[in-house]
Image 1 (cartoon, each protein chain N blue to C red):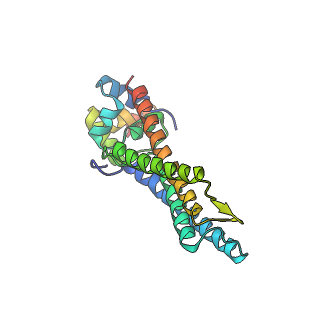
Image 2 (image 1 turned 90 degrees about the vertical axis):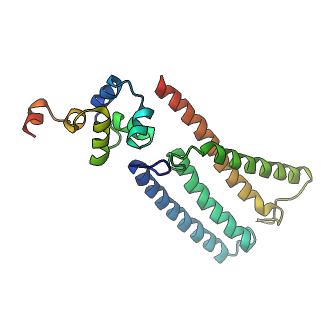
Image 3 (image 1 turned 135 degrees about the vertical axis):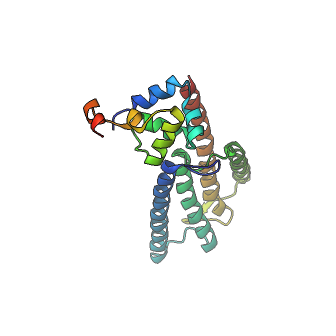
Length: 148
Length: 73
């Protein structure tokens, strides 16, 4: 059973599976990055690499949780969180477009430039925001169909 | 797993939506939907909570055998 903020028994099981997938994603991404470094491929600075890998793992887990309906409990705060993520993604997109318009190079000689290092993070953030919005719309349609 | 039409009809008889039943038993609407579709096997605790809200017994809603088996249990 769940209280107002908790997940129910089915959602808890799903969350466990999703976190397991996150662990697999973390392992693959870290090993992949270590392999790239061992063969001399440096695609970004150390800090940007770590942040991007971390955000990629968060994105994998978040998107799966969102679409399997276990990201939010029954708090009713889905819309507020979705709007916050959407605003972050929109502001990131605006910054990226401004960089593109000013002719900034994002990628050079097989690696992200200092200005371009934040680009993958923007894209990952955008993926989470779009997933949240899409799921919110899908959920409304499902609820409407269910009420009919 | 087969669809749980007994649960669906008991809910309809009480004129409850999936969301209302879900709120009463403290689960997500999707969980009730999946139980009705036969895609989720609920715990005995959740089954009994649903039965309590709908005023039915576990046999009424969740027993899948024929009537003869039902009487022997």
